[in-house]
Image 1 (tube, rainbow, N blue to C red):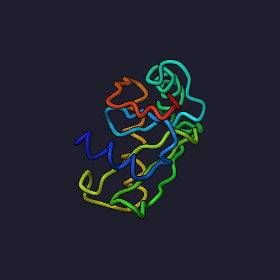
Image 2: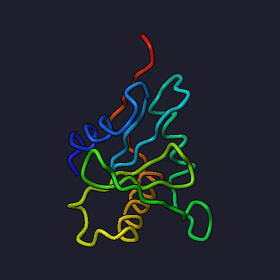
Image 3: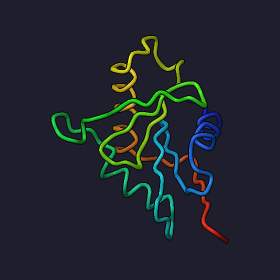
Image 4: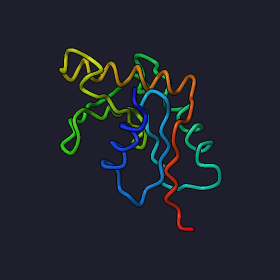
Length: 124
């Protein structure tokens, strides 16, 4: 995964006034009330809402087909945690395949969170 492309993708998709944090596998945590160390704040959220537990709300997902960029955003049980899936990451582009891949990427980010980018849009 090219992180620079994913960073630019999230910049195009998200409200430019929002602060957010990107993790290794493409999961983005939008910080609605950014405070303190944004990477730590996002990591705390992702550790709780990233790991998948099948048969519970943590296993649920929805797929959003993106209009402004190629690919999809996969949502989960926290409204501010989204995972980007690029078209070249899989051969089958049906919503089930996309959603399962996005959920798996979120799970990996939640279990072993590694921050690759922090977009701090708080006023100086």
